[in-house]
Amino acid sequence: MKKFAVIGSPIGHSLSPKIHSLFAEQAEIQINYEAIEIIENDFNSRVKQLFEDGYSGLNVTLPLKEKAFHYADMKSEDALLATSVNTLFIKDSIVCGETTDGRGLLLDLKSKGIEIEGLNVLILGAGGSAKSVIPSLLSSNPNSLSVVNRTPEKAAELVKIHKQKNPEINQIGIDEKIHQEIDLVINSTSASTLGEELALPEGIFGPKTTSYDLAYSKEATPFNLMAKKRGVKKTYDGLGMLINQAALSFEIWNKFKPNVKGIDLKLRS
Ligand code: ATR
Image (cartoon, rainbow, N blue to C red):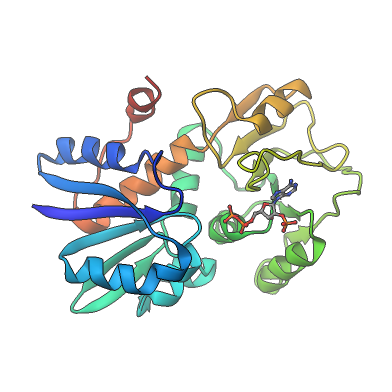
């Protein structure tokens, strides 16, 4: 039986084992998919050991995606643009790294009727999660993509990386007032995971704004609750992205494209 795992820290509450077992049922194959706690300092030795032990593929989650990027001998174009890897596997004795986060987000947005092309999008945060989805957002031709971060230098750095090829990316200061209507606000910060307040620029939510929190939880996420309080009607959390990025990994490993419809309801029940 093929062995897979999701690695990260903390990993106890990961939904990935459940999602992959639902996909395996669809594919009518038997797999063994575990959640394995690995801390950053142990990354190289533990991952080497897992592949030696016969694991066919690894999903990588926080805080290890950058480590995985550096570990992979061969990286996909998406991974290179995102400087992030969430899917590792061995092909012809070479460790290959892919990121399915950005495409997972786009597929989920699409399934919710949101096409990025022509939209004014604003992303909160400039850490690893923002980095991993920004290239996909830009490849969908938004009218604008504004990056807002508590530490402005980090947002500036991210904008600089993409600005030449994508002049529609820009930075907005947390103290600035926003004048244009934002169609989609994406929260990529870890503020709510850390139980912290999240300061927002004035005018970020308008009557037509949709909010999307990359984090997910059984109840509405703190960010989406805040958005709702400020009049946002459509709010989504990142469960759909999680399912879609998992489906893309599953397809790479098992050459079977899972049907993601209804998986969210199974996970939320
Ligand atoms: P991840 O991989 O989840 O993106 P990360 O790389 O540590 O984690 O990035 C966390 C992001 O959340 C950063 O943009 C961080 O802002 P700073 O660059 O200013 O640290 C943001 N963040 C975390 N807590 C926050 C808070 N309380 N308010 C605003 N932003 C916060």
